[in-house]
Image 1 (cartoon, helix red, strand yellow):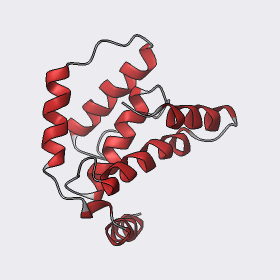
Image 2 (image 1 turned 180 degrees about the horizontal axis):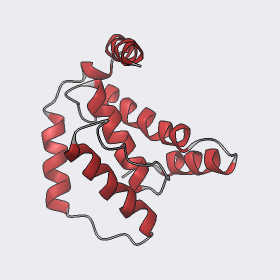
Image 3 (image 1 turned 135 degrees about the vertical axis):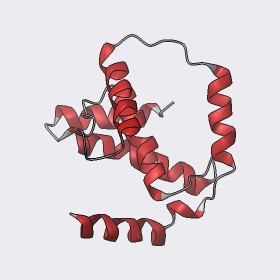
Image 4 (image 1 turned 60 degrees about the vertical axis):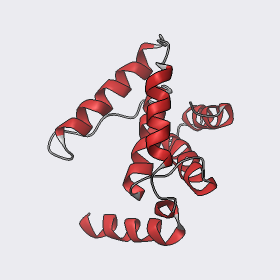
Length: 130
């Protein structure tokens, strides 16, 4: 569950007319901070970013899922599901058992994936492919 300040900051960005991806950046930043603090880990910088984007979509940020062919089909389906959940406005109770299982799995992952060096490497690789 994202922190209230993060949601408020993202909604403020949208009110100011900023792009949904900019607003979603708040959630990504929060997720990277969580990994750095040791709340949980991530297998790669991409995973930390993906978790943040998923949280943003579920919080109601109108961030469209990737277009077909851009990413794996499973990733796109998951993003579509998150997007529709966030846009519906009705929140179903989250399964405590599933949340705990996800959290425990992430706690076993490395913390170094959100280091400045790892994120810098990811940014360079991503810009090269553009």
